[in-house]
Image (cartoon, one colour):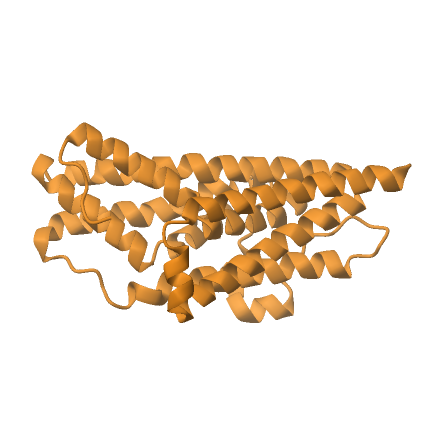
Length: 272
């Protein structure tokens, strides 16, 4: 996006919609699904709010960038090192979550519900360290904050902050950052609540449904990570994916829902 509306009401509406769209990114959805599953299975009370916590951490960085850009005015330039940082952060987290969920589904005894692996085992612990466990509200918010350290997110925050200068500076930039966060919070928060309900229902249906859903969440995480890596290294893939964020986000939710329905049907068939 090269420009934003010059009317305040239109600008505010567009920034809110950008937040909704950003929360629908496939890497957001897949990460939130994985974190929600890990914490739901570990019976953490905050599990249903993983999406909201992720968005709040992400939004805190967006608001901070908006404030910095507003204070720096036209002298702001997005750092070059952000070009690939966000992509690598999302790839590493998605790989870790994907491996955790697939490993749990494959290694669980056939007569038991898939147990939560978290990201605590040796394989993933070496990859992500303590942060990768994401077993507390603060750590989940921190994961969201790290995801915001990307060229696209920072550039977008800088753009609407600079546009806000014509309306009064810092206060308006902070309002836009808050609106962007609110839009993202709606999308990611609903996704976290939705996936936690699916997981709880799958666990009620016991071993078969929980295994199918665990494989789906893990598989989606791995596929999104691989796709993100392909976008970084293959320009034709990056060009093809341009503008298809909503399609990919929808696909993530459809795959998870279909896997739940399949698991539910298999669980009832095996119980007959």
